[in-house]
Image: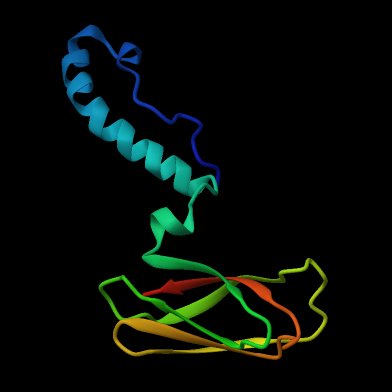
Length: 128
């Protein structure tokens, strides 16, 4: 299915007797069309379109856990790894995983498999 390239309602495209009505509708309809066009042309963002919270931190050497305050008003359903990299820039060569728990106000994230001798930059994304 191809989406119509028309993205806006233009008053001048209509007959003079219809322009008053079109003018009244255009502001609301054009806002809606802009949003739909953005959604269907791969311009959705996690921050703007999903109820989520992003957490960025450095996991120090020998640490495998971190916690952060959870500020959304619904119970989290998942915590995803947005990114993990070694703080020194060297490559991560082993598999790792994340488990998490929620205590009502904080999320505790526990990593398994990260090199204990290296610090890691982490980005986690929580979703409801």
